[in-house]
Amino acid sequence: MPDSFPQLSTGAITQYPSSRTVALDAEILKFVDGSEQRWPAGGNGRRRWELKLSNVSEAELCAIEEFFVSQQGRFGRFSFTDPFDGTVYPDCSFEADSLHGQLFDEDSAQSTLVIRTNL
Image (cartoon, rainbow, N blue to C red; front, top):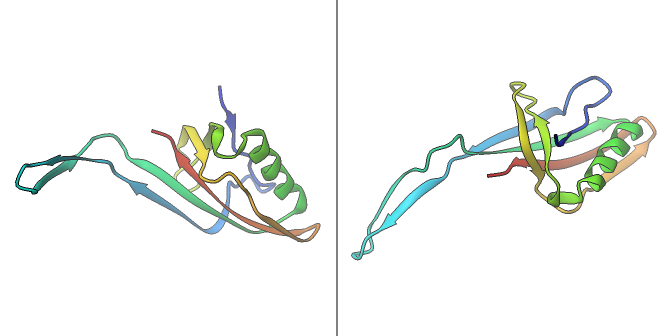
């Protein structure tokens, strides 16, 4: 069973305003005359979350950074609970190999990260 993305001390996954997008795949058939025909490839699409953490504690930021390092950036796979509807997605990854956090004091830190489902 994969690791789970850590929750904040409040039990939430992220803070608002965070966003979620869904990209649907399409099959494309190209004809000799250059025209195309497209149709949905099926499936639920790839989900992507941009998590904006603008007021977290140093401990919360450290927990997220430690999780990021343990996953080796986008190489790792983990489960992620959608903060908008509570659905658990068992096969997710970070979208980048670096995580930038900014610490203002022990009770105020911020970071933005992107998580996506894998196909």
